[in-house]
Amino acid sequence: MSTVRVAVIGCGWWATFAHLPAIAAHPDAEIAALADPDRRRLSAAAEAFEVDAAFASAEELLDEMKVDAAVIAVPHTLHYPIARLALDRGLPTLLEKPMVIEPRHGRELVALAEERGVELLIDYPWHYNRHALTIREELAAGVIGPIEHVSCLYASSVRELYRGDPEPYRDLWGYPVNAPGTATYSDPALSGGGQGQTQITHAAALMLWLTGLRPRGVSAFSANFELPVDLADGAAIRFDGGAVGVLSSTGAVLPGHDEIARFEIFGRDGHVLFDVNRGTASVHVAGMTKTLLELPLEQRNPEHAPARNLIDVVLGHAANGSPGEVGLGAVEFVAAIYQSAREGRIVDPANV
Figure (tube, rainbow, N blue to C red):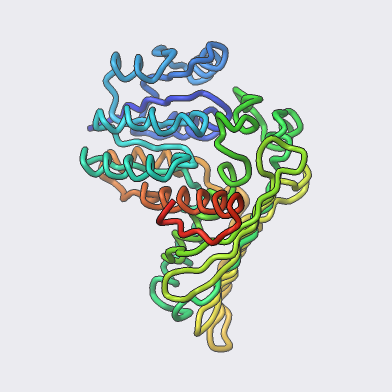
């Protein structure tokens, strides 16, 4: 295969900001077709990326076009049925985060991908961050010994999205083609929730991917404040092997102020400090500190990396950098947060 023909399903903000530019810039790929039920969004994306084949639904696109891979970037609650369509046709697929809302659906997709013999990637750009890759290797090698405690704070600027107003973030993020839909993140019927589904999914996936830990008990609180979905969530975690941790997150950072994505991982023989948004990381062992070179801004959240990885996976040039199993772990963790907050008890993510 000399050129990978990619179908992109969903032409909203993130697809037009990250995925479509990444595919267009890849020397061994082309955007074969687009699908979106919103004619305005579909037309704008087709014109911006010079794509002739445009369809109102994923079914139409997949029935009529021969493609080699699919990127799915639709509202959260639509991930499962559309991913099933793509995987069932044997297409390597990049699925936007969160992988799905219901853990049982995530388990079905992982099984289906394995059954069809295709790769399922979940869109977590932090998994391609060079600091994250280095820290993951260091932890797997046991540099800090057995992990005993993990702490994560993720504070982001998304409050107005949960209110249904993307405009306050136009200057901050830039909407080169299409802005987020007003209901995409604010309507639970589309989003499945707020901070948990939109942001904690990133932090949880990275925490689990970095450490290899499996959470076995989650005790959480959640608060909506004036919004239709959760704005702030906090969880205490018990992991297999005895480690404990905390993960807290809010979408209340004001536009124009720095977001925070900070991980602190402590082991018997040392600890790791990782500040994703500042591009800094360090490993501390036996009185010695190894400080990694600060990452330039554009490498801290490499939003083009997942789509490039999909293409390289299809070509056989790379391994899956963000597999479905990691996405499933994040889905189970977020579901456990919501269940624990709702029922006031400790929840095992494996049982949600």
